Image 1 (cartoon, rainbow, N blue to C red):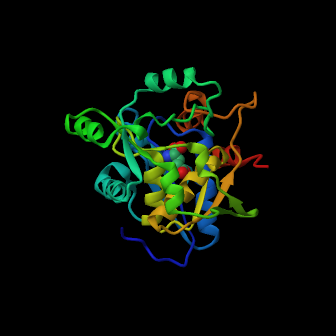
Image 2: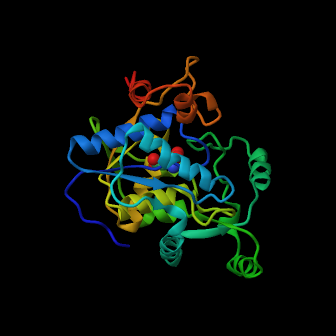
Image 3: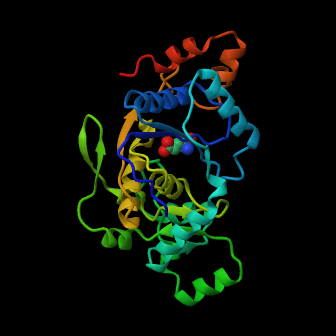
Length: 289
Ligand code: GLU
């Protein structure tokens, strides 16, 4: 993988084009942009559009337009993940060749059924039950037969083997806090390629941060737990570890995090109601304690 050697600060904003940008995205974009600008570094834009069922080209176009309206200029070409599938495939093949991945044929319903039967099923950081490991135990012959027959499957990380391949304590560096210990085991056998998408967020985001030479990952605090898994993938793939600066999420009046469902808070809607870029910047950046 081509890694861009750099001594300057490189940040990125990496939205998924699944809806219009809202104020929460504007906060993320502004944090990354200011961080790069203040350091005389580079600010990159990446479209994380590997989920064909949820991403739309018109949203991708809207992202570029809304950022430009807000006054944010990015450096270089936009990286569009769906144009780099061969790179993610190569990373997956490398992990598979080391015995660190296995195909999983389970449906969501299969997993729930299995987990319901267990007395106290452990849950991951996202609140979903951990994968009980059903397909990890499939005999090699059956696995090969089902793959050859074209049975739809995800690819899961064999967490126990992955931890053995990257042994010892893992940390990521959080700006202002120092080294944060990682427990990627909390994710269980995480999905790295989905049935309906050629690679998962976790794989693509770590691959691309390395490929693009990102030195500081700025993103919402909701992604903080995922960083523990990302650090493991970096260690397994010998990718450099960037620093992290997770920022507070923007909350609505009721204290809930903003989401794409809150159409009224889209940058588009605010602009149509007459808000200026400076006003939207102030709304997005206010109250970051
Ligand atoms: N694509 C992710 C999202 O829109 C953000 C990924 C990241 O910043 O690491 O939530």
